[in-house]
Image 1 (cartoon, rainbow, N blue to C red):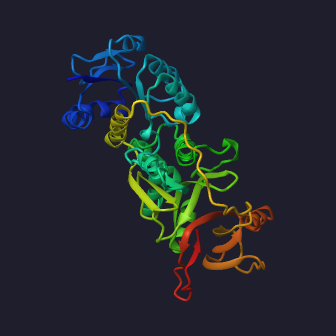
Image 2: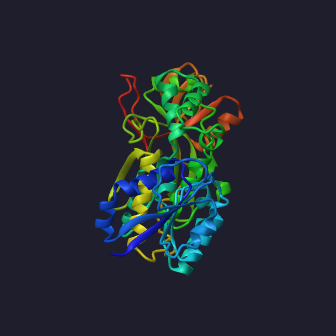
Image 3: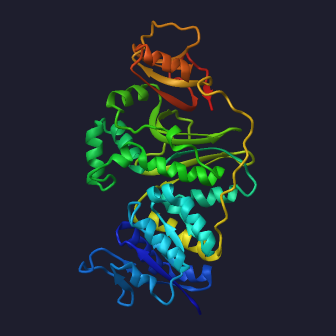
Length: 412
């Protein structure tokens, strides 16, 4: 029986998880692929560090040794940073190996370049682990796009930010204290900028846009806002109104362009993301035939991420080659001029005595915090005039907590 030879680049949390999963699920992989899967080599930094790796596996810090192996079918990349990752993967493709990556920053910047190279060399790329850990969102979108037209994709794509917001609400912690706890638990890096300022979710959003719509928006046009400005007071105010803060990436396509944003928003009890807590991730996809579906699960960690990599291993080995260009999808002509769409907002710093003929008051939390209906242009005008200190959009339906306000307001 022939064997599939795999090399793993990096032996941190993800790399070790992939190695252990290949060992523990050897029979399942052989049954699905009809061939054994063997780890032939592992690229590491420190050769002196003791690791629980079989003696027949090449352990090296020199990638050229891996490229020189007589057989190298798949290269799994589990390191960080754009370089040397990009260079190593390009060399693997030129060697004739399929590649699998979990590196969202590198892939967001250079995914198209890698796909073009892979197409020339007739190999495949797996990148499920770049977006939402163990949630099979890319596989799901691939399946949907056989017939469905995807309209909108929304997601909680960063478990660290979601954990911090959950801790702040449940334990009445400050942002600084919740971040410190996330760092102690290993959810956040010493420098948490990528997570809490939305860069990590932004890269994942660009990857999702390519899958869902075959193209991505101009990066400079995407609104990216982190969670560092969210205070305990804001979270408490939202809770009084039956709302929760979530850091959500949104992408939708109109007839003329793609709109995308990565920012804190508010959701009510009927929204599928309301109960997505802790380090969980979730993705909601709206398409024309199936309607709305939501995928939820662990967004990070050794084995959730390894699960995505292993599914990609099966994918690339069964679909050789499979690097067709992303298909640019069509969209319904339902475009509303930016700024003119009526939305729901939580606004703070605006007196309840303030009146405006185009603004509808929906619910009041405090003397200076309320839910209102307004267009983005009207909200921006209020902020410029300094009649409000901050505001956040509310997604989906919102039902005021007050008993004398029974009407459900829906902004979809």
